[in-house]
Amino acid sequence: MKLYGGIDLHSNNSVIHIIDEQGVSQLKKKVANDLVTILALLKPFQDELTGLVVESTYNWYWLVDGLMEAEFEVHLANTAAIQQYSGLKYGDDDSDANWLANMLRLAILPTGYIYPKEARMQRDLLRKRMQLVQQKTANMLSIQGMYDRHLNRRINSNKLKQLTLAQLDNDFGDPNVRLAIGGNLTVQHCLAQQIKVIEASLTKQLKLTPEFIRLTSIDGIGLILALTIMLETGDISRFDQVGNYASYCRCVSGARYSNGKKKSSTNTKNGNKYLAWAFIEAANFAIRYNDTVKRYYQKKLAKTKVVIARKTVAHKLARACFYVLRDQVDFDVNKAFGYSK
Image (cartoon, rainbow, N blue to C red; front, side, top):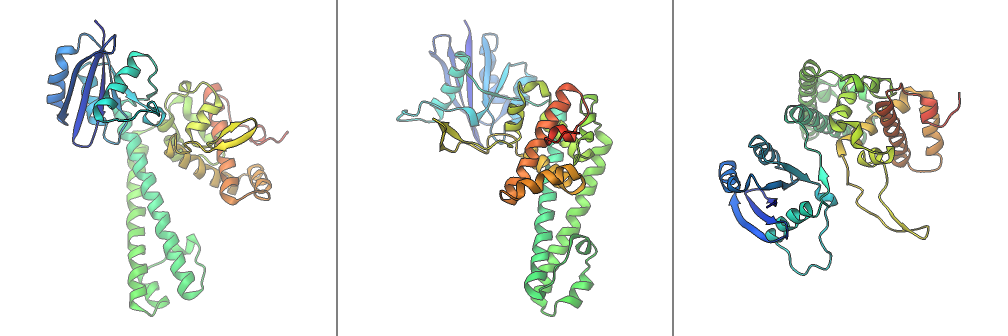
């Protein structure tokens, strides 16, 4: 008899539901989030279990890794793509776990990619770097805003990097303002140091695999961004078409059309936010250093907002990345941005 399992994972407990081929419940139990307890509960069903479905929540690592190490067949459910019957009057954790198991039984389960454990740790360290870079940018903007507000003086990023606490004493007479901006500056220096530490560690651990080496031929993509794209993308064959990859990178606007008219917006956050950030960063560099990309951006900027124009460049780069990886060819800026040689 084939069995199918669903696990509705929460912060401190999990609801486990196992059903048979007819959808009849064989086990329904709520347990604490303890791997030994969960494995002991599932062990009697292991030989008959076709698979176990775990929700892709923020804390799935320990459970999925533990189940896989115990040789269970595990599927990671793509929660953003799962939608129960909209007319359902009542739902709870039991019904959620049952629905996961039933989707597996009916072969309609939208799954997420279970990244290999070792590479996942490296990927998460790169994600931490991204978080620190964003915080560093926020501190820079705050310091620039303080200079603008109190002194009517613009301070560019190069001068900001050379800024010292002694310089703040000369520039600001009010001790409260000095303390406020000094806090930003101290945090800024700390973030810059930690980013360098992470980058040094990652460059020792990681090298671009042969199929990803050509990423650095794409204007705007250096080593760190290439490593980010490599670890976040995984195997490019996961994506059937270029549009699927661009959508995964959040470079495609979410909308629902009927009879040629836009009826509603859809889930624009469905996709990989880290790839979205990587391609926006690549777009910023490409606009600055590549004349062809810059002309394309300025043409778009004349018709729309800065954010949309920049996102359009990111979209083009994401599409170019797909073809570079799939076909193993070098980046052609003229082809990517619609200019003939």
